Length: 247
Length: 230
Length: 117
Image 1 (tube, chains in turn blue, yellow, brown):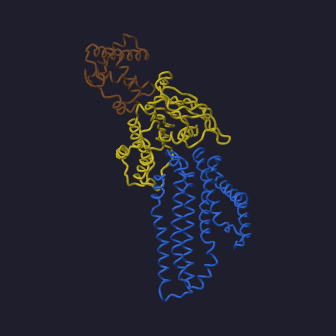
Image 2: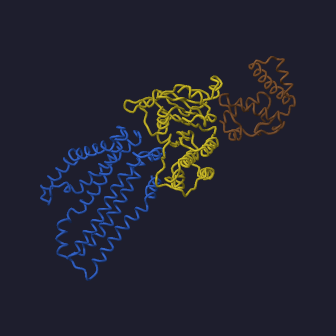
Image 3: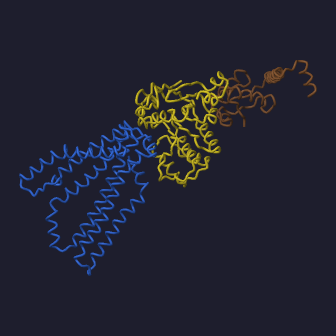
């Protein structure tokens, strides 16, 4: 697995460096500006906004790259190489997901780091106000979003793999994959999150906490559900790659 | 003789289309086989199943008594017809990748072979001409010390100089411990290399036999025989 | 390099070519022959085909194999001279058959040959 991971990093190391360097540099520039004594408090919000936007762009890049990592191997000629090396399907998939995990972690550390410093520059009154609003849910929500996006990529991997293994069909493959993906999303929402999270919501209301009615209120339970989902899709996709490949 | 690869009633359908239709075929150690036939006759499909890229619809194939999987991939060296190398690679990256991922890859041999094939390690794989790509693919495939070599159309679209080099390399890699299966529709150039031939058309084996015996019995070259059959 | 006529078994052609080389003296009595592998690579033929040719030569006592040392040409003068005989016979046979096909009688054949020489 390490060997494959090494090559996943090696082939795009310039892009990786560039990506995180850009995020750090932009963060540093904004921070520098905010830290100058002449800087007006009113503009801090704008700096936070600029940083958030940069961070978002890089997040999107990470997600798209995560999807393409497997898509390439399934649909392009290089799959002939990837799937004739003597490695298990799960090893091949894991090498890609580990890189995705590293990238999301790295992105989170940098974004939260700069974000919180920028945030601390806000006037005390505003800071407290925002803090009371988000504090309670901040970490579970963040973890939920990260795990949800990780699953998002993995579910697309699964849909693509399913199209390319059991349903060998080149012409309609993207349509088919999209269909499978949306079906999964619908199915999971209804059958998986739904019952669990309704339960949680019910309990939270019972104990009189500040539960809102969104999915996020699931907190760490929702994160846990996501991790189980990851395990399920990882196993299923690995199985298909290992035993049913038809490229 | 020891059988290293054996297909029994092997079939592959793509929806209605039969790419392979009940193919029985076996391969012994230490011999060079030709799987010959027109394009679309099922040659590539057969090799892809043996390489583990396609699953048979019916029937069975075993290599060293195992179905295609991680083990067989470790003893089968497959050269596909297409450009399977990652686009980001330089030639040296490809050599390193093979060295890292195949335990039987001999980097020393690969470097020598690159010299013989007149390929520069710093060159990017995307800039190679078709002949150079063919030479590189062959270098990579033959620098492994595998039990089975599956070479899919190694001479297709290759210039005469590359062709000579490729044929020399194949002969150079021959060992009594290994079997080589070459698919081709350019029979003239490879027929002297072959011990045994299978003619594959529309997914079926329509003729097979020892190359010398076929020449003797029919009084014509395999190439001629091929033209007569198809 | 040797040109093959692929419509005749290749090992037979290799045998003929080696015999010819012996008769004309390109290959010397008692000399060591290249290994199967080497010769297969030079002639660009399948090593098993090459092996078969060597086996056949061994059987005809034109070569002999020293265990672990390789293949050597025979030193028997008799075998070599009979080879010469064999090849010349074959050439004559081809000539006569060819001339017969053209409608030459035996007498005419001799006359043309005399004239030519």
